[in-house]
Figure 1 (cartoon, rainbow, N blue to C red):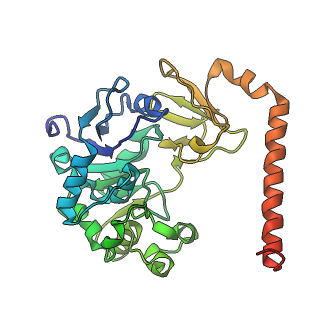
Figure 2: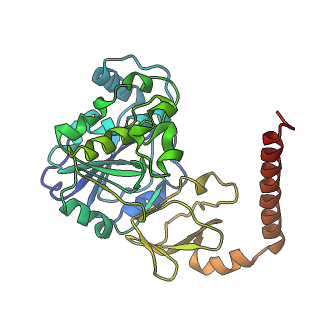
Length: 329
């Protein structure tokens, strides 16, 4: 299947291979894509059955073994018994692996399924209109959650500027698509290409930052618009093409579930139909009418959660001090 060139004008082709089983938040991801005219989404998978797809989402039947064969051909290397999660390392190469599907598109993108999209037009259109080569929503490193790239041979081939490509061909995820083991230092505003000694990996962030600083490409990197964590008490209002803090302030391009989906106390309900208007807070997804009662119920449970957090924090602090004093090895 190739993209419909007549419908691709002015749009971004978002490429997402996914294998295993659909995550519980997949219907919420799909719901958030309804009416998002900037994105044409291609999901590559061999999973049987799926929720209803919006008009701008196509599901492409592609067995994992077939995709691995395409990768072996592209890199001229043998691939081992990889987990599908390993594909994240290769996001910068998706423009080459799925080149048939981005013909006619000015831009292509990679991202994740654990995303609830907001007002893409508001946050993405200005960057697209300014003709940036790469658009990402983390200032200090290139985001694996959502990055948009110009559909040019220069950008599609740029991943090969890494002089440590061989390090990608191990069974575990190494973080090539972001900043590898350099994330912590990158958050302190150190350029990734100055941090090679940390992990001996020339990662995608190193390549992009170096090319941008040399003036070879134009990079848009902005932090404020991709929400990834919700402190206790804060709430997001989710509506069609809108992710906002409850009350209408602080608008976001998307909410990334990367942290909260791993928390036991975070509930993602199996709604038969995703509502047009709901709330996300530190405890999960809720219909608005149920929210107040949910947050007020069982104060003892809330007390235990807070007490447990304080005890865990205290233990970590004591362990750290005793270790530094040489009392614990």
